[in-house]
Length: 112
Length: 115
Image (cartoon, rainbow over all chains, first blue to last red; front, side):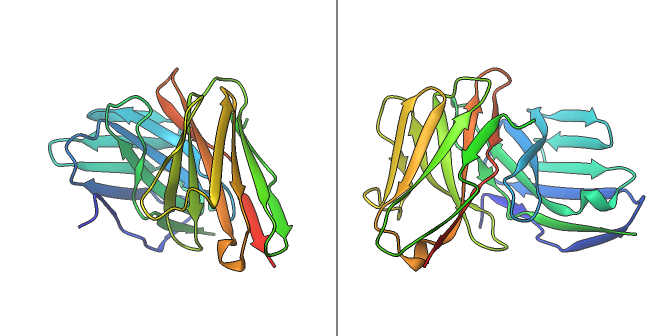
């Protein structure tokens, strides 16, 4: 079993839809949770960063972490074609600069 | 704007030659940087952790003599692919840990093609 599970998709939604992306994990030591967006042939771009449990909102993006369930989510409101990309969840423990553990990434396609 | 710069963005080299990829943190000091390799439609595979002023820590299965990592300053880490072969052709990405904010930022990646 992988430490981080993420549905690879692809996920296709119409423009304007609310998108829900999720990851589950097994390592209870993870304390920092991130979502990265990766466009084709580019490096990952940090979207959201959360420490421990809770919600965080930034514009159209909301990240949720439920440590009791070992479950994290990213919601995208009013999705746009420009949101079409691969979304990677990533997490790490509390060690200084400890390495990230990634999900496989979910490919999202927002159609007109 | 980008906080981690990677250069070159793409490079083609002949089999048997060596190629160097640079990773720079632009507005912060990064004592720790990471090097990844990514195959098409797959997630990132960590190759090594680069620590300023000390030897890199390589992941299992990664040849340290083939993938030389140098982190000589707080803003620069380099990956040198030595005696490159076509199977080394891949997308290489670096990331840097920024203490302020406790976050990790990625470079734009470097496409390596060995012919």
